[in-house]
Every structure is written in C-alpha cells, then in structure tokens.
Length: 301
Ligand SMILES: Nc1ncnc2c1ncn2[C@@H]1O[C@H](COP(=O)(O)OP(=O)(O)OP(=O)(O)O)[C@@H](O)[C@H]1O
Image: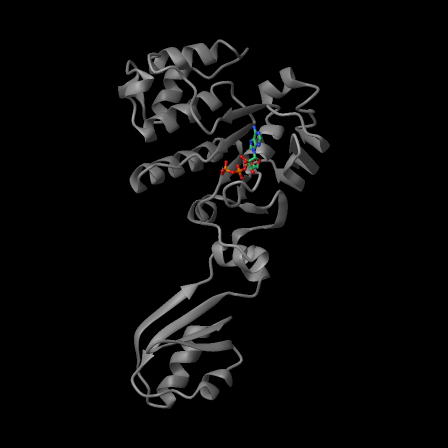
C-alpha cells in the first residue's frame, strides 16, 4: 500500500524554482531515500510532505491526508526530524522529550525511547553539551515520540564521524523493524545504498530515476569493472571477444575492463589462457554515484 504519494510537486521561492516536477510514492514499511546533490530540492520536497511548506503545484497525500489542508491530522501520522536542530542550548534531554511528548495524545513512554536511541546516560545533559551524533539521535527520538507511522529524516548523518554515522544507521534500521515507514533525505551515496529499499535520484528539482539501488545501477548498464596490471602486454581483442566485456580502457600500467555478469572469472580465465597474470587485481562494482553521473551528467558529491 502506498503510504506517501507525491505527484507533480512544484515549489518556487519567489522566482527561483526549487522543485520543478517531483513524483514518487512510498510503500508502508519502506525506507525510501531521496538522494541528490546540494540544492537539488530534497529538503523542499520533504518539507512539503511534512506540511511545513505549501506547494505551488501538485498533490501530496500521507496515509490519505493532505499535508496542507489537514495539518492536525498529519501531525499524528508523521514525525519530522529537521535538518538543523533548533532546540535551545539550555534545555535538558529529558525536558525536550517531555515537552514534545506533551504535544501528542498517545506518546511513547519517553524513557524507553531514550534507551532505544542510546541516550539514557545523557538524560540530564543540556542540549548544548551534546555531541553531533547525540544531537542527531535526540532529534530522531523527538520525531518518534508521537508514535508516527512515517518518520521524515533529513540529512541525518551530515557532519558525523564514521562511527557515529554507523550508530545512526543502525538506529534507522531498528526504527524500520518497529514498523515505521521512513522517508530519508541524504546526499551520501553509501547511506542510500546501505539503508534504502528504494531511492529517488533528484537533480535540479526533478526525479532523474527511482528504483532499488541495485535497479538504478543495473538500469544504466554499468555493473562492474575489473582492474589489473598485466604481467605481459594484453591484446584488447582477447578481452573484447568475451560476451561479458563491454569496454577495455587503460589507466597508466593498468587495464580497466567494464562489463556485466561473471566478468571477473571470465577475464581472469582468458588471461590465464594467454599466460598473463593480473597483478593488483581489483573488482569494482558500479555505485549509485556512477548511476547518478550516467543519468544526469553530474556527480553526487
Ligand atoms: N527559504 C528559501 N528561500 C529561497 N530559496 C531557497 C529556500 N530554501 C531553499 N532554497 C533554494 O531552493 C533550492 C533547493 O533547496 P533545497 O534545500 O530544497 O535543496 P536540497 O537538495 O535539500 O539541498 P541541501 O542538501 O543543500 O539542503 C536551492 O537552490 C536553494 O538555494
């Protein structure tokens, strides 16, 4: 079932078009990613879904609710974690949770939530004294305190170190296991690949493509490459004769073979038949970044 439906969303800031034409739908229980470079229109899109901005065109429904006309109903369905935390530095962690819980008719018992996000030890700490990762985890807890069916998480791990980022990723996976549908905005390819069931690639206020991460990569026909330094000169024709191989290029002393299917075994076998040893052998899978580049002509990061 589609829990979120966005069709032909259009949003301008005065004469600047932030979102040209964005459509996507999110199934119940999914982690759906919105991936794109800075300024692509991601935040504006999810702010419209969250009822924080009024679209200039198009239609949005969240569990059948119109975010513009039915904000009170939306509040009970959707919890948003905002890009920049806007809590006062002096507020204590427990006070923030207690305050947010008071906004909802049936809030989560917040000490459990504090435990879930790993902040029980910080219960009495002031917001201003928390680390970046702790602030992010608190903001996730605040988005979940009203028991939403949908959580909107915007640039959740920007500015975090790798360990804190992995901790937040685990938290997101745990929230999904609890049955919450997640709309996740990110400009990190790894984050989208790791967390998202499906991803919409957004560029210049439009959806360039939407699919599973693997489907997006396969869709542009760039699956993988094998890179090696041959022990003897290798004739391109030997490799190009293999059905798995699409292209052979050189990078200094290295040969780069692009293709599909069982590329690496096919290439190494062909080399062995010609008594060539592939030194420094590396197999590289295409990434969402490659798919984005192929679709838009631009890199994500
Ligand atoms: N309040 C605003 N007033 C005017 N222009 C804005 C406003 N908010 C965003 N924009 C512009 O609209 C475009 C889309 O911005 P948006 O924040 O939605 O993109 P984004 O993909 O989320 O990028 P980022 O990751 O940098 O937040 C950008 O060109 C941005 O400068």
